[in-house]
Image (cartoon, rainbow, N blue to C red; front, side, top):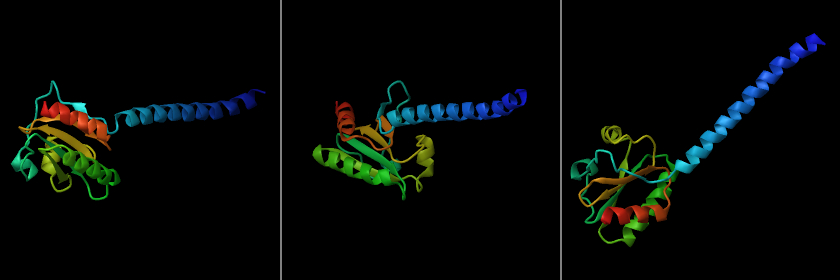
Length: 149
């Protein structure tokens, strides 16, 4: 009987480890899903300013939507469509897409960790909001309202 109990202990330990790994993976997945595509405010931070030198083009009259993309990024294509559409809806808003692989110095300076990363700039080039992942159109419009105000 004791031998059977000892043989059962390693099996139970493996089960506990598997359950713990599944719980941690689920928690990580839920946190990642909740943060994906959310535009966060840059308040309280040293506001970085971008201009012609960094973007390679002029800023929008009222605001600029900056997108960091990479060649094989599927969400980047959807993000491009959303940002182009929103920029077309609001006068004085420009959309600039930057290839992250070709601008590694800027990527490092702005702490861009993944693509797509979206920055919402005000008229002077100050970063008002930023987010990574596929954003919702409503969130982009709300961030533009903040940048223009």
